[in-house]
Amino acid sequence: MKIPGATSRILPAVLLFVGLIVSAVLPATGLVNDYLQFVLMSVAINAILCVSLNLVNGWMGEFSVGHAGFMALGAYASAILTVKLFPGAPSFLLFPAAVLIGGTVAGLAGIPVGILSFKTRGDYLAIITLAFLMIVKSGIENIPYTGGPRGMLGIPRLTTVAWAYFWCVVAFWVIRNLVYSKYGRGICAIREDEVAAEAMGVSTRSAKLVAFVTSSFFAGVAGALFAHQLQFINPSSFDILKSTEILVMVYLGGVASLGGSLLGAGVVTILTQCLQPLGTWRMVVLPALLVLLMLFRPGGIMGYRDWNWLKPRIFTKPRLEKSK
Amino acid sequence: MSALLETRNLTRQFGGLRAIGDLSLSVNSGEILGVIGPNGAGKTTFFNLLTGIYPPSSGDILFKGNSIAGLLPSQIARLGVARTFQNIRLFRRLSVLENTQIAYDSQLAYSPVDALLRTPRARVMERESIDASMELLELFELGSMANECAGDLSYGSQRRLEIVRALALKPTLLLLDEPAAGMNPSEAMQLLDFIRWVHAKFSLTIVLIEHHMQMVMALCDRIEVIEFGIRIAGGKPEEIKTNARVIEAYLGVEGELP
Image 1 (cartoon, rainbow over the protein chains, first blue to last red):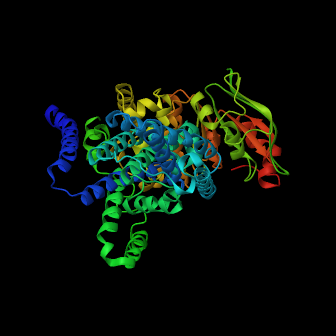
Image 2 (tube, one colour; image 1 turned 60 degrees about the vertical axis):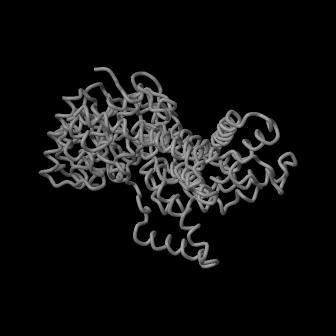
Image 3 (cartoon, chains in turn red, orange; image 1 turned 135 degrees about the horizontal axis):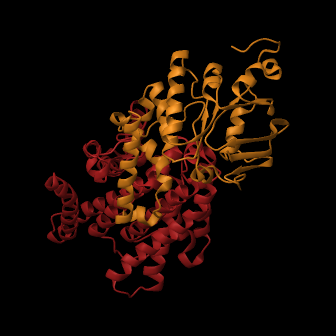
């Protein structure tokens, strides 16, 4: 039993590493054109947004519509760094730092929203996150330093397939760790019954803070990647429609599911691209799909379930039976 | 015997309604105390005050000699006060194991950073959480259902799981809110043996709210009677059975309790 245990532990790490090498080498071989690279990066960035929003909307069972606001903070914070403050710095140092700082700024902004969620739930919290989004957007619109409503131009193109892949893996790994920890169980308990969770010793306040800060951190990371992929950002890139797009991915892929987040981001991103020839009619396909899904599978494709290979080993079923 | 829990002039007001008024009583260490009273007497409100779900309007609650009035429910739970709910409140979409773990988790001291990075410290404690929870589930013959959703269990198993979940907190005081609700007389008598066994096995102090008189009389060392939020009697089961004030509260006329 030692050998299969070891394999199942090393195999994912090896696969992830091979993936990183491939994603770094692939663009250089010329096998994938710029357009395909753009789609691949978009899938990865959307997957980060989707899994991080899923933490609040899926695992914790709240309804946040402010995810684009956290994304905006990450995008602007990182772009200020690469465009305004250190335009000449070597990109292999500057870019990771910019992404991290983008995530940190967004993560800090998650603290007040998390604190407001202590006493506010459901519809009321949804409105608070909406207000947060509006504050961020109109705030940025009124700062001349970052171009006001016209936005920031000339952001260096630093996001590569490899970087997008790398941050995507980090986001999934960290959120997996969190979800399968005592804090993650506390977050799920809040979704199921907050009063019972408190009565069973779950500090719902710290669970909510951890959820909001982690979620907004990765929204910021995705925002930073997004800014350096498109090379141009303005406040209206981060409006309620952007939040809605992420919400669609979450509820299509599956709530409270890592696999579902990946699936939702992949399906929505690729479908949007594939449906381009349909013109305006493409706007009908996705919503129709969503309506059908809500009728037949309200939790999404993978709602409340996950593939075993995404879970830490001690939580997969055969191990549980052995531990008896 | 010393008092494990004591309330002093405990009062809770909901708008104009005084749900609990000037309630002073104590729970001795190691005893099984029954709290009875007609519907709407304030029994569940009393539990909600003890566990911090509502803060008291006035008065004080002492647990092991320290005031716990105004603490968060999770803080009170961590001090060793566990409870079950009148209408079962399990985490329905989570597994039986996760339900148990969530209560056990309050004993794990690792930080959010340990959790996010899954450090060795977190791994060791996660293993401990699973093993200890499994052990507890095995003891209550729920081990084979560890991976099932709590909401899919039978009514009886759900009641049992709620008690297991409360015990996973390693409490010194266990509050049971109508554990026999929805049970027939023979099931209720089985539950009686079960509660006695739990009481001895985990060396607990138990306070229970119950309408099933036969069970209360057989199980409890002492009984407190509440009506309209006010304590109207207290004493040994035999004394309560014949107390005129209690009989009046329940039946309105003189007679013998069943």
